[in-house]
Image 1 (cartoon, rainbow, N blue to C red):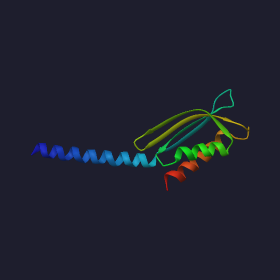
Image 2 (image 1 turned 120 degrees about the vertical axis):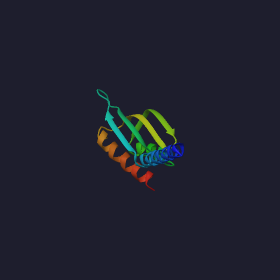
Image 3 (image 1 turned 60 degrees about the horizontal axis):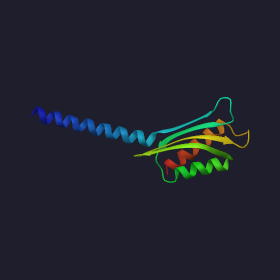
Image 4 (image 1 turned 135 degrees about the horizontal axis):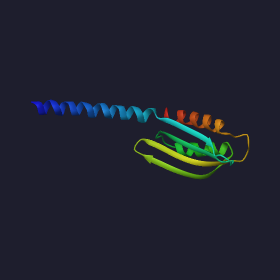
Length: 113
């Protein structure tokens, strides 16, 4: 009888962990954009729920803002999408704040449709 109760409690804990995991996956939206000190480069880190065509949309946004991707690292596991990129803007009027807002807006649109 004690073993049955113990197994039941374990099953409830597993279900709670699974629900929390799915909640986190669906609500993670992290965008970090920082200027690399002493250079014109900008470091971008994005982590969010996986969505079809998200990478393409991000690259298109970079192109529209006239920034070059110098280096990029991609991660795509389970339901999580990650990208880290070093960007070089062609114009000095593109800064970290503009990139941050554009990426955050793009991700919210892509992951909530």
